[in-house]
Amino acid sequence: MNCVVSRSSSVSGVFVVALILFLLAAVAVVTGMLGLIGALPANRFFGVHTEAALSTEETFRVANKVAGPTSVGAGLLLAVAGVIALAANLWVGIVAAIVAVVVALFTLGAGAGAANEAIAGLVPEQVGGCGSACGSCSLRDTCQPAG
Image 1 (cartoon, one colour):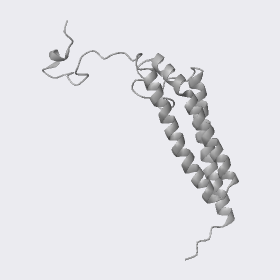
Image 2 (image 1 turned 120 degrees about the vertical axis):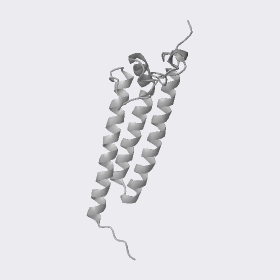
Image 3 (image 1 turned 180 degrees about the vertical axis):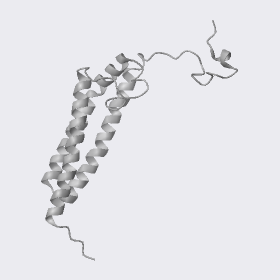
Image 4 (image 1 turned 60 degrees about the vertical axis):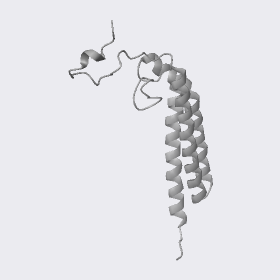
């Protein structure tokens, strides 16, 4: 079986791969820069959005300030992979894209981990041992703190 890929389909395929990488890079760099300067509004979509980071405005700001450099680094890595995808042939471009996305995800994860460590002392402590599990049960009074 002879597998032939035409030049026009490989060029358009590489262009789409590069475009996706550039868009992801732009999102990561902008999110990282906004986090670094403390201008990223608290949200559940961009930046560090763990439960601890979203607990207060201060924890969100500090977490994203700590994770900002890794987000910018991941964005730059994705942009470089986009350039490689445009300059190389189809298969090299696809491999570069896959490797860059995997490394970028690990980089972002490392930033989120560092951010969670940085805000560990800032997260408000939960009162009571039951959380919200005893909100309407007959044992609710046992969940209340002593005092």
